[in-house]
Amino acid sequence: MDRAGLHKLLNLEVVPGSPGFIIYSEKQSARLNYVAKFIFETVLKVNVNITHSFSEFETSKLFKINYSSTSLANAFQVRPQSLLFETCVSENKPKAILKNDLIYFFESESTSNLSYDIFSTVFYFISRYEEWQAFEYDAHGRFEAKESVLFKNKMHLKPVVDLWIQEFKNELEKFFKEINFPKNKFKIISTIDVDNLYAYKEKGFLRTTGAICKDLLKFDLVNLKQRINVLSKKEEDPFDIYSSISEFCLEKKIPLIYFFLFKNGTKHDRTVDPNSNAFVEVFKRIKDLSAFIGLHPSYNSSVDKNLLIQEQNLLNQKANENITISRQHYLRFNIQTTPKLLIDKGFIADFTMGYASSPGFRAGTSFPFYYYDLAAEQQKQLLFVPFCVMDGAYFVYDTISPDHMLNSLLSLAKEVKKVDGLFVSVFHERTFSNHLYPGYDRIYKNFHQTVNEL
Image (cartoon, rainbow, N blue to C red):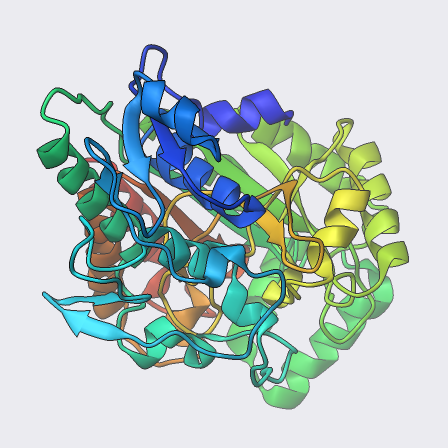
């Protein structure tokens, strides 16, 4: 997938003929440029220009936003806090203000048109500033939900960034009576992480023999019977969901992306041998049904460039295309190092931005946003595509019933629908095995069928 195709898939283009805004700031700020483009171009789908020249601002015919402490006539004012004009990472956490069933940060003086600095607030979350600050890593070296300021304030289940921008838009419409914003369109994208291509097939003699012995020792006769039936071709491998799910998504016009793990032989990487032609056959099937392919970089690839190179090169060869999108295995992702590895290898988008242990909006938004390197104070051309729910949060990290899981998924989707955002779901191939997760195998189609009709 190239950058143009990705932008089309994610609805990232500014609508032609959209209104234009000009923002006046007394100081230059790469942070302001970054967050303004996200708010106006990505979410509101309008053009934006930032100037430090008062004369240019004064004579402009565009809709005017004054990001300074000086009051200016005929301009919507947002009073700046200091965050966007700093050039380091502070360990100070912003104070949370709860009102009107929502959370706010970086409170401003009441004389401005907004009661808080929306640019600083949004920047704090989409730059993942809190992941640059000190926090307690989990067992897999991850930033998990309990470390998030939104989780701590019980606001992680709402796309608060999108809600702030929606409120901002409403205030702009009140101030500029003649403005007409384009309308975003709610969209769902299905993604499946393939940690193990098959449950029983293509494992080789030694792995298969060892697995049979394990079934016998555990007295797991159900698993043993299914294994033998699959190997003797009496039934399909339970992980072989690639045709049925691809056909379902194609019929429902739901974009579908599979992220394939391409390493085995370690405690955390246990797929079919990546050199196996079994992958080639699966890739042909899903591409014939219009699904996309991404890399699921292995457990240690987030810190080992050589592993990432090996896996990407082999996947490119087997898929017969240049793979440019990824999601880290186990969601092992370090905001300061992992993006640099991906950028160096030509990846254009990463889909890791979410939590393993809990549903919720890790960056507070459902919209894609570019990586901001706080060490270099630069926006980089790696797009983060956030998800707000992963299947394992309900039955690996918790014990939530299938029905309650379905209700939770639908509730999250409705929150995204309110802001006309992008809903990205994450399932795994093993979730479709009723033997492993009784009752959860039906959730995928029930949910996607329902949410596609919202």
